[in-house]
Image (tube, rainbow, N blue to C red; front, side):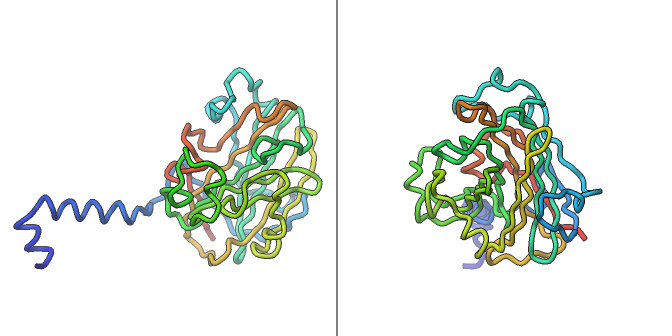
Length: 263
């Protein structure tokens, strides 16, 4: 029986099939908001920001960007001089670059058990613009150890401004504890580069990498959020996100913003 006849005889069933098909192929066809156009620029990852001159900054300032929960409350954030940041991105050949400049008036050493409880830059990345769950069959109630071995669809990448900086890429391989650093994977499988530098207002992180099995091209759209956590000596007390959305961003990629690779 063809689909046209099915629609005539059983219109409800036909509509259900169409709806289910659409849900199973949930890939955004237009840029999600907020949106950022990523320019083509050959960046040298050396901690010197001269390569970034003229590239648009995203300013992440103000209480509207705070993520509240997990012990973080509005009263623990003391304004933009306490905790805020900017980020910008570029791409060249098959590598994408990020510069994150953090205002942090109380920089702390990397000593917390879990990566995200330290002063930490996070890149929530959906490089194939898939949306949906970041890890297959993982919800907010799934214990950390049960993520191991699951199928990864997008990345929650943690970059710690230690000396030297520490990188954490894939929480389906190992739990993001401080000692489970993934720098070797970053350098050898992602062709990664990273530099950190203290500044008069806090610190910066400059990052470059190629996503495994992904070929970059003009007009490619990716899902993205950028976040920075702030530890003032008693573990993470505030977290700011580019999107500012109060969702479990480490689980779902539906509420990410987007970037487009432009010429």
